[in-house]
Image 1 (cartoon, rainbow, N blue to C red):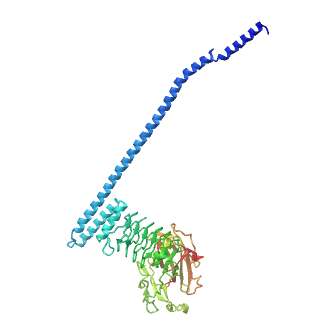
Image 2: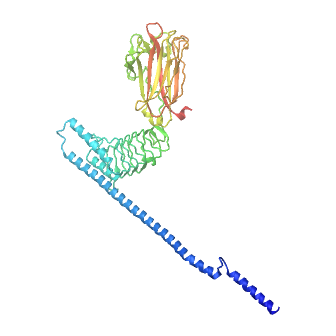
Length: 504
């Protein structure tokens, strides 16, 4: 390669190097780096400013939240203090007022003044209890008991409706707490605790003691009738002669020796129903006896014979509305009746023909209340109706089932379907508020009796509606024939309550 060619190669390489150093807008690499450095400085400062501002805002926000939380806590604390002061003030005022009242002699007060005094004490007590916390409620009850105002044998204050939930009645293991003969009926004692307490002959009837605890306490003679005691707890308690009747003990935890031997009309821990048990609910003597008193009740009253008549009102279980319309008479008065009924009594229309009058009997179902309210009570109602030979006179029978508040839950009636034809029928008719389906029963006509003097059995059965407490039977004697007497006859009433499982 000659000198000229070598010069050209060097020149070419210089040109390429210069081109490599040129980036944008004719700037060289070094010039571009300077420009870039000049731009990065304010950009970095801007990013730093944004991050710093964000952090400062976050810190300010957290500080504000902390301040708000502190203010809320302070406000809650002040409110709690104000509430505590209000509760304490109400408690102290009540104790002082009751103390002053008790110091006054009541010897010169009339019966009305004493009555009004107790009314005022009750009103003030219930009003104060609504303002107190569980701890002071406990102290207030102890005060009233020590003052003799809650002793069940000394006309105690009526605390009906008081809420004593979460109260804790606890005594020391040495001295204990004395609440014997205390009257705490018709009150709410949910989650209440009784530890080392003497509750001999205490009255808790009709109270709610759900989740209640009785530990190392004396419960001899205490009355828990009609109580709700689900999920309660008994441990190391004395229960001789304790009354457990109509009690819900579902989910209750207790050893067998912590339960009274006698339990009546109650639900046990596992939900099992007990009608009457004398061995802690192990066995049950469920009653399947007839609950209706018939015309030949063994009460010293005798049914009439053909020379002496006894009215329906002569038997204490039967009543009459408006007028006496039936005669309780011996079957022997009717020569056409089979002699196997001789000496028995029957309801006979006789000479009473008032269409607006009736006789009735009401059966109390409260001894089956827990079974009924658990939808497991089955009733079987039976009656025998008929008449005399070809006579078309008949008896109209209806029954109603009512709650404790006397609300009609179910009503059935034997009604005339049509008028005087020999093939007329009666049927059992539920009203619109019935919980059972309509059930038909054939009426005992003279054709059914084949024109003979006799009675034919009719029956009805079904599940008793919840909260049923009374079963009433109503009887009307309907005269159709032209004879001198109403010859409708009815007898052999029967009402039996069974557990649902027994009907299968």
